[in-house]
Amino acid sequence: MKNRAFYGFSLSFFAGVFAASFISFPRLIFVFAVPVLLTGIFFARKKPLVLFCFGAAMSFSLGALRLQVSEHNDHPLDRYIGKKASIAGVICAEPEKKGPVERFCFDPDEGEDRIIASVGASGRFAYGDALTLAGTLKLPESFQTYEGGPEFDYVSYLGKDGIRYTMSYARAKKTGEGKGNPIVALLISFKSAFMGRVRTLLPEPHASLAAGLILGEKASLPEQVIDDFKRSGLTHVLVLSGSNVTVVAESLLRAFSFLPRAVGQSLGALSIVLFALMTGASATTVRATFMALVMLLARGIGRRYDVVRALVAAAFIMLLENPRILAFDISFQLSFLATIAVIYVSPLVKDRLPFVSERFGMREILSMTISTQIFTLPFILYKMGEISVIALAPNLLVLPAVPYAMLGGFATGAVGFVSPVAAWPIAWITRLVLSYMLETTAFFAAFPFATMKASFGAPLAALSYAAYALIIRKLWRRRKDSPPSAN
Image 1 (cartoon, rainbow, N blue to C red):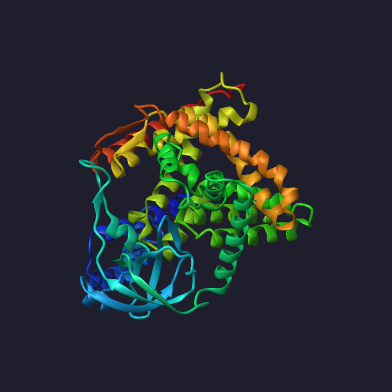
Image 2 (image 1 turned 60 degrees about the vertical axis):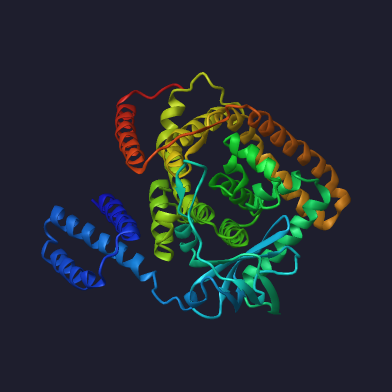
């Protein structure tokens, strides 16, 4: 009953958040609904089914209320829309440099709405700098991913982070610095210094690929390389995915393994949190970090680690902090879909691959790749309208190299701090691994039929996942009833 209550109430909360993302509920409803539901819960406490229904309705209401509380109707900067304006504020995230343009999130002194601003790339601005921006303030617009393809809701995508406006090619004047979180500023400075060492020892695009693998940065990668990874179905390699964070977490824990267990795990947990902050704390990173911390806690207190509970708990806490990511953050959605695939689909696929060798983790990689590709397919077609039809082969060939490339990139930067000469042999080996990844990706991307465009509406995507749920449920029941395999 406790398990059902945990999952039932959590899913009801998620449903409430999702519904309120598209439907505006008058707040007066909650004024009456919450007391009524609490009264119902009190009188139904001895009737489990009725109590569960009241509890689920209460969770749904609280989810919807949480979403609505996160929104505000006061937009004082609206008076500048379409006009030239001079606005003071602070850079609230690490600037992203791409060619001749520097792009950053700007938090104005007036109001709660943020601005995505772009200026000429000069390398002079940093997180926490106070600026005065001068330019034309505009509202963002949604756009089609390609002609005839699905529309990308860019407005809501930015809105999830509190961003309401854009200001392109603005003129910026620095008026101060050090206005951000000092811990985040220190971590960003360390990251910049680390990547500076890597770039002195590795050529491009190898250094930028290492930055993408270790730190989730791909802004400095050439467009051709990014397109190659996209056509090969390897875009997830360029961002800090859950698997990348897991590699980092395991490496950090091993680094502290010589210490007493409690001390080592505490330092490992702290390092994982600092790493998440340093890399920008994206939805994928936060989810993987939370699950890693829960795993550490379970080890520390001698309890069994329940990965499904950890996943649901991670989603719940993340939605409490920012409920808008459920409906409007593609990375959040893909991260959870891929994790569900690894938990529920991958074991089923692995059972059907006894002919694949376990050496180098090939069977595990193949089953996870097939599972995530199949399970995320309806969502990707619905949101992006384009998929890589050759993704299986490049994933199978490239993914085994990722941990070695990450380890090599990290060792190159770390040793480079002490002695660039000592780091050179490590950098040379790392370059070979990165070259293999780049060349393999480019080879598959050159196939003329590498990608396919397809229209896939929301109803069809929903039906697909309903069918997936029924099939997975049936296969797991059959798996439990079957005798254990020798494989």
